[in-house]
Length: 223
Ligand SMILES: *Cc1c(COP(=O)(O)O)cnc(C)c1O
Image 1 (spheres, rainbow, N blue to C red):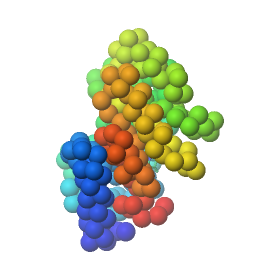
Image 2 (cartoon, rainbow, N blue to C red):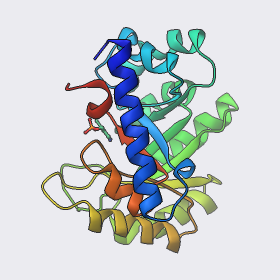
Image 3 (cartoon, rainbow, N blue to C red):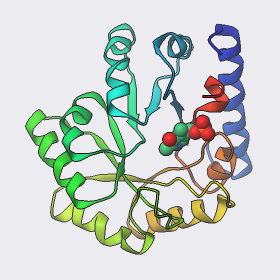
């Protein structure tokens, strides 16, 4: 979907569906940010969306993002880049330098590495804790029962401000209960933001309180 017109259509449609889902839930559509997930797509596929005013993007690999976003940031102001994939602590320095938001903090080691790098680079990122709501062994994220203690650790031991929670429900289950659980954990821990919902289920997520939805395929086409 590199054509400008089809990008415009896709973007308008997703924004309209977010607005409708928000309205249905008695929410303000402006409280939901669209994270355009541009993983596997190159600068030429991303530029039409930047031209149309989209500014929030998600990437799941540090190295891949390094190959395109420094150039795009030179061309467009106001970009907010979210890391939505797993982070290794040996990539923390590069991640802090490149991203604005890291959504995937899920263990002490990575929290410590980010705290150290943000100090070293004198740069404050917005931080989310990833919760493995489906307790899937192959998936990243902290177990729901440990989320509260982990958030407290990040705040009190490391002085990190945790803005949000993020989850990726099991692909073969209804997302609703997972989104509801994430919302409950956020309320219990005084956390304002919820990153949940992808191309297949973002309207459900908006209905359950998402403040960020991460949409790839429905904007960029298949990967
Ligand atoms: C790829 C990805 C998305 C977007 O998924 P689509 O189904 O293409 O919308 C959202 N969140 C994460 C963490 C991803 O890795």
